[in-house]
Image (cartoon, rainbow, N blue to C red; front, side, top):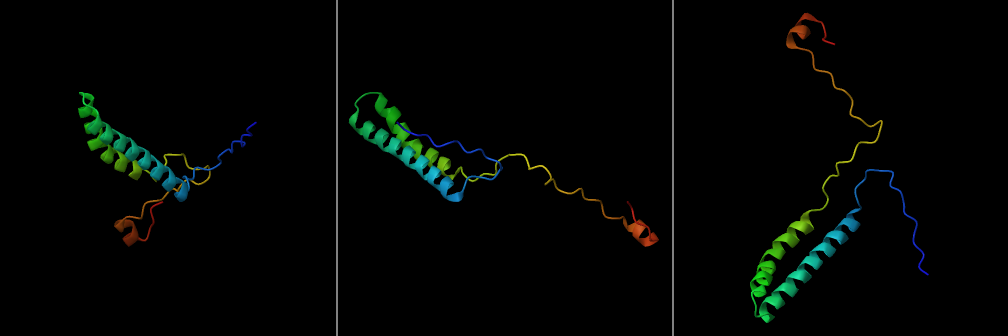
Length: 105
C-alpha cells in the first residue's frame, strides 16, 4: 500500500525555487535531446519515407529543446497580495505655483 503525501496549499504568489526550476528545465531538455537521438538513429536505420520526417525532427528538435530549456523563470502574472498595492503618487507642483509660493494639491 502506497501512502500519498498530503497536498500542500500555496498561500503565496512566489515563484518556484531556483533549484526546482533548474531541475525541471534540465529534465525537459534531456527528454527533448533523447527524442532527437532516437529520431536521428531512426533516420539512419529506416528505409522508408518516414526517414525524412525523422531527419526533420532530428534537425529541428535542438532548437525546440534550447528554447524550452530557456523558457523558465518568467514572472508569473499572479495578483498582488491584498494590502501591498503601490501608493498613489501626486504630481509635482508646476513652476508657476512654485514661483507664486502656492502648492498644487
